[in-house]
Length: 552
Ligand code: AHR
Image 1 (cartoon, rainbow, N blue to C red):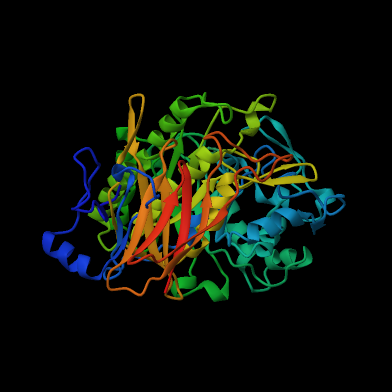
Image 2 (cartoon, rainbow, N blue to C red; image 1 turned 90 degrees about the vertical axis):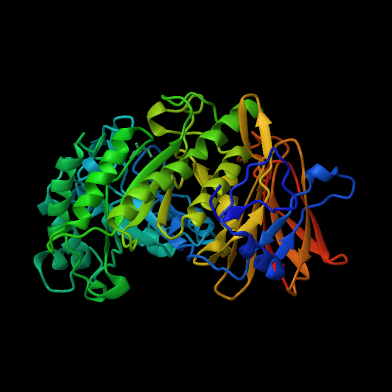
């Protein structure tokens, strides 16, 4: 839990996790003005009550909407079939992009999509994916199953896709097997408004106006699949790409429209990763005018054993708690790398960009192991909520994140099979969290409690609060405990709160999933609570995520 999540002093049993960031004076002041939230069921025992107070007097950082970003790699059926079916497909599409997937994604207000990889990015040559589709080179995808890459989904198709879902493109350029020249040409091709040869080629391919490219990733996992580089070697490459891979769009030359350049950053918990961050950030502090960096990437997958052995279906409480225990490690990792960044960038100009994260399980039975197909269960919904909460608590430094991945790959939002489509539990968490996009973080005080399974002890409850752009207050509360409901009793002290309205996502089992045949097993249900006396009673079911607005 983050320092802004503090235990309520009057309701903290000895065994609870407590993290305190307020002085006693602050707390007394806070108690005068706070909204106090209790969860309560009529017959429940006292220890099952949790008090949760929202400190509306101390707003924090903006929760950047870009932390709700996604990742679409040329991997398995992530792009081909999942997004792209081609204009001649019987599956309803717009210029080759599936309409059902676009409609579903629009509901999430997806802020940005990272593309074309991943490991794929460092073997991608953009020219293979431009020009008339029927004349494009057919290549291979050695990273992901060695399958044929038809290149029919290229630059124009990707930019059309993000336009259709109203998201911003986050382009990863090839550092591993490409050149600065190739990447510079790609950016000129996409962004120049001047009548250069590349602009004319773009216009001939159907897009005369320059595209906007707000985010540029320079390499991917350059310490591993991106070329096994040392931090110093990568840094020398990064400086060259940062200098020469320019965005020429006239609308992106100044202010907050300028393209942000994101460097490869750490990818695990071992000491080598702090060395990587130190090297890059120290260079940033002493940088020459000729290069710049706006973001440092971090990758963290929730995987207990490597290669991934845990199954995505048919598991029990032991695997549920172990995966969630692993996922919470990201909090410490963000702290560690943020501390290094603070040392060299105290003004927090460089964002920590968690541009790959999520659960990684064993491939689904019968699937191509190179396609990273896994089911998505209620456990993944809880995992997603916990990660989003952590990003929100670190909103001053974590200003962008991309779940891996969008469709059919790893912790996906959507799964497809030919004409069929199903929305996953993770999809519904993203939908419920839409009000948190660009909202202002509001500190909460709550007693996390504990939930124990075997030798794993986790906080029992997690919560964040935020005020949206219209001034409405929102709460997202996760009950991690798969056995016990949590009771909240909402009292409004110094507030006009009258009711809570929102949705709860839960399901019969921790491994409940949505399937093509039963798509409604894990879907949100309405929930509300009205003031009773000075309290708002509400129950959080076991293993659930609840998002409510506080109505006046
Ligand atoms: O998301 C799958 C892969 O995981 C990505 O291609 C790579 O960057 C990471 O190792």
